[in-house]
Image (cartoon, rainbow over all chains, first blue to last red; front, side):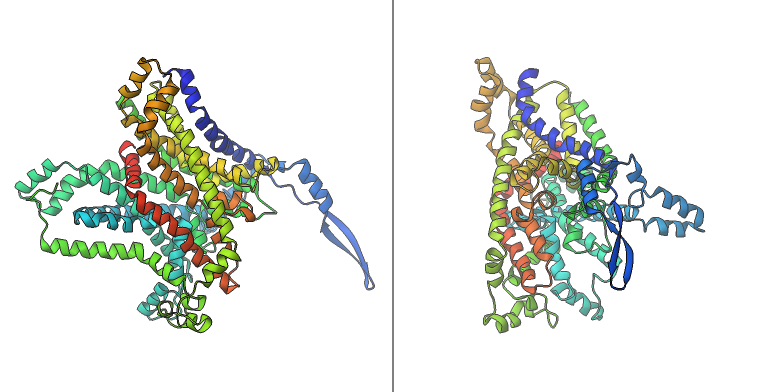
Length: 342
Length: 293
């Protein structure tokens, strides 16, 4: 295909991506270099029958004027990245010199907003992915053996948690897990503790979120594994049966090696998708104890009158760096594949 | 294709059926529960006294005179203006699917037929764009959109969703067009067609299976989106998912909470119907991604 034709075919799609994916990243970066203008304070003398007092008030007029002149705020360089809500360089330095033990230092570190969110995001990613892969594989093996006529409806049932949006999925579970819901009461009954609530402690909330993550992501792993199972060659399996291999041995030595590349694909997609975890936190109303990087950005942006563009931009940039690190293996793999293709 | 020697023992079948049933309960029961509960009042669905109330509807009987009620549905659709949210969702979903398929088929066809090296770099860029968390993009949109005064309206959100959707659509259709034999359009070119004519008269008639799959994924993205719609639309233009979240914000009003429950059912039901119908295409799409990388 000549360059010219290619250009015209690809132009609309490319333009859309460039304008609405490429530019926003740059715009985010640009925003992160700025900080909201400080409010201009003024002293007002207030007099009433009991005497005069001076009060400091926000000079609304001057502040609005400043905001109109510099809508993005003043230039702050990389300052936002280092402040307390992001990388918190000063706080870390201070904690490093002042704390007596490593434990104390990590304790201080993990109470800083950014590191707290990073810890949750990474915990979520790495706690959800392995069970998803294992469960997805087992369910796929299991569905593969049932009668053909039942397969369609079964598959439909199994993929439901994946189809609904995370917010709705987490709400549906949240309403059941609620202390007044069916699962919540059951758990209270099980542990014989009428005050037990999964919302009561941060560990329990984290576990609930992780269980939700597994519930939501397993169908994806299942579908991919199930499709890959259809491509497992039958000859080696029959040979193994003749040689007297048990079912377990056949799965272990023939099926699993065949599925390795598929498993890495699932792991990477899972890590990437869970790195942006946001909706479950809102659905489970877990903002208090579990914040993710995406939630930090969302929180900076959701209030309509005072959006913290600078702070959101800086967190976005740091998140993108995180995604880039997770993405490197995929990119390397795609590059290798592409080279062998030619 | 089951070979005779690879027969399953009775024991295995039993364990297997039990496992599958248990798993089905885990994945389906929450939806059945919510569906059932959406016809009850709040005192039943979140019953402090006994969870069985949600099944039997004791308080519903006391409050409304029947064991199940559609009060929450009626109220959320009328008073809660869920009809408006539904309409917005339909507008956004239909527009996003149409536009992104139009752009996607053209772009992906070009990518699959070009032999130059830059196609690879474009695909890699698309892969990177696909991995970007949507919220990071939203944080980049808000400020310029405010300045340009295009924040809060549906067209902006549609274009943004189309763009966010492009990378995945491109990859999916790219791997689909790779399976369409090159000889097909090459012969048309030899016969004197231009590339556009070849695309229009030779490729378009055979591309529908791939387009349906890609359309299904575009639909799910637009229909299910929360991050973009909740931050880029103003309250009046909310689609279903942010609307449900907005109902939750007003917990004090106990009626509103049931609005959210019934709206969850209203929003999920059409999606499930569509997926039931197009299940095969959905699975083939996910698989194409896995096999092709």
